[in-house]
Length: 223
Image (cartoon, rainbow, N blue to C red; front, top):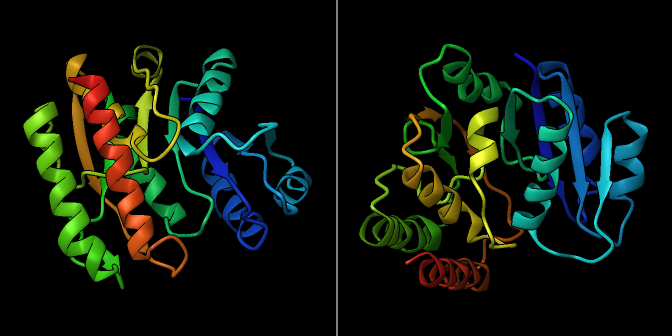
């Protein structure tokens, strides 16, 4: 099955070449969506020979994934993988999220760092003990979504699922919105164990509050 991997990127010039080089041999097509980076992210990605899509303004990760997903559907993708540009995900885990779809066992697969005994390398305590439990509770109470990883950005969808799933949140709340759409459409869902390698960037207290703000906005929209 033809597998496309979307990598949304914003100011990732330090990581984009490494991430693309690791992902490229594992899929049929890599689509990098540059979200109006102010550094060399787009130029470096283009040199690797991937498909490069560019936003002329910074719209957020959710919007970048929507742009990439629309491209993949128009160009014959049968499985669409969402993958981060910051080096937190491991490329070898792409097989884990894509395989259940290839086998017909699932239509959507979410990567879960909580199904792996080595699930998080240095997960920030605020994220581990506050953000994640709260996000899991919100997903369960408001969306009736009961998954082990409430904010998984590493996922795979079949073509049919990607056609029917839509999300309006341009930023981090798209994670919960996608889970809600999957539940609403009664797609066959599985979780796959993944490893997440945490870096300092984006893991501070204020970054966590921003995720929670976006999450509650998504809750209001989808109730």
